[in-house]
Length: 328
Image (cartoon, rainbow, N blue to C red; front, side, top):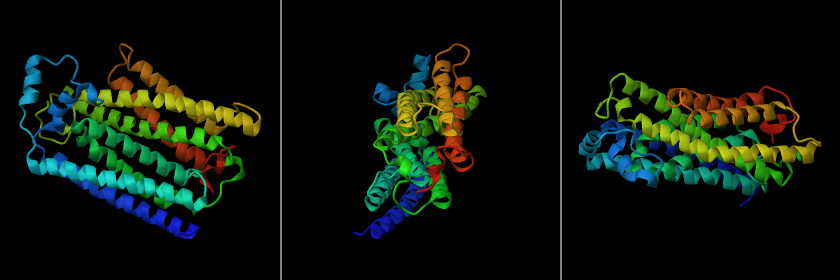
């Protein structure tokens, strides 16, 4: 295939991915709406350390029995869950195809501009969710809350960040692109899932504080317990933090090679460091008396906001040595 044909295929796969993710959201909604019990708590407890979550701390034996006694989902609901996971997995495959064909068309790594970078970040977030959902089936009830932002992000990326494929600008023609940018993509994608889990934790914990329980029939009542959501947010942040740390360090080394200094407080560098500080604060707060729970979760949500701000505002509005990030 020619470069133009590969570029066209990449664009087609992008639209296909959006369609598959949208159908997956519908299927996840159906699973959540028709489920007889909230968020498959029995599966979450049974999964234990095989997945990310564990049973809420301090749960009594009677409480555990009550959870285990909740009626299982009917076969039709389980089918919705399987269909949703299949659609999301197919979407991830076509999503990966977007980047593969883009890279083949341009004969370079496919994250040399904001369109490609953001597309890759969203793919990492989807894969992170799928891995968790496969290891702990109860987390499939989070699918609607993860895939809906994914669809919105993909539409926004296609509408506002899309650029035609082309060669890298001179400043990006370095082997450090594969190291620095790749790790930044991985860290951002994992933080995406962590931030959503913290948002859901804030909603769920308020519901529980107001007297809601695992048997609630509303949408919030079908979410995993607050303790489970807190554990998901924490463990994903723990996974993503060293990756982001390495990305910041690799960026500094690349800066010294390209510009003759490790650090110059360029807007992109500054906000990458601010994000690192926020996530370090979250991990510290998560284990500090008085900051556990909702205060720490808010710090994690702020961290996701800083990451999005760094991607959009700093690249598109501010000026600096990284201003080439939005063009070919």
